[in-house]
Amino acid sequence: MQPRTQTFDATTTPGPQEAINLDYLPLTATTVALWVDSGATVAAVVEVTTDDVNDPAVTPRWFPLQDGPTTATAYARFFEPWRFLRLNIASITGAVELKVAQAAELFR
Image (cartoon, rainbow, N blue to C red; front, top):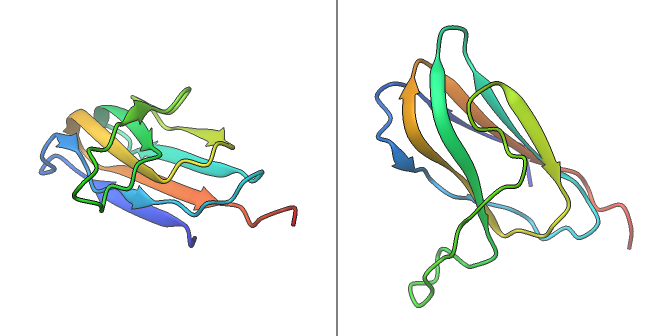
């Protein structure tokens, strides 16, 4: 997967944002970073699922990412093979970016 960036600001409607499709890459790292601009504030949760959010027959079950960034500029890494990731925003002022990158597969 190419690195992805989603940008949000005060005009963003709170709630779950567009889900990002992750590649299934076992034994590799995925990094998720939240950038909060100077003077901006955000209260949000990075959520992940193993469900296919594009399958209308499936109700996706979303889980908060353990140690995921929530209110300040920070990042987290994980190695579990989640299928989708999203930011669920409770409140926001100013500019905020969600960045996601996956490493290439290390072992074959």
